[in-house]
Amino acid sequence: VVEKPLLEVVMAKADHNQSKAAEWLGLNRNTLRKKLVEHKLLK
Image (cartoon, rainbow, N blue to C red; front, side, top):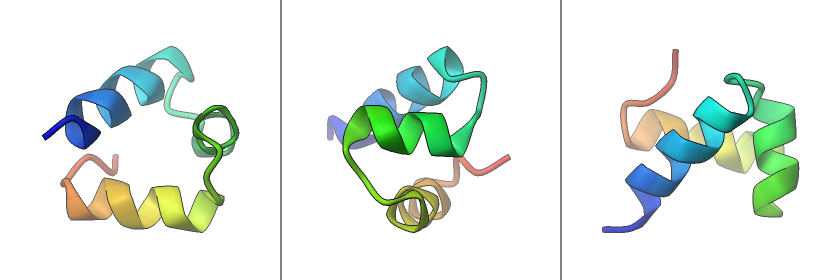
């Protein structure tokens, strides 16, 4: 419930830089990519 809005905000703040967003979230970049695909947020 919280994950999709959080990903949207973090990706916007990171200018859609996945490496930067993953670092801020404490995730591996590949894990972040999977979550973005899962929530249909991947540009």
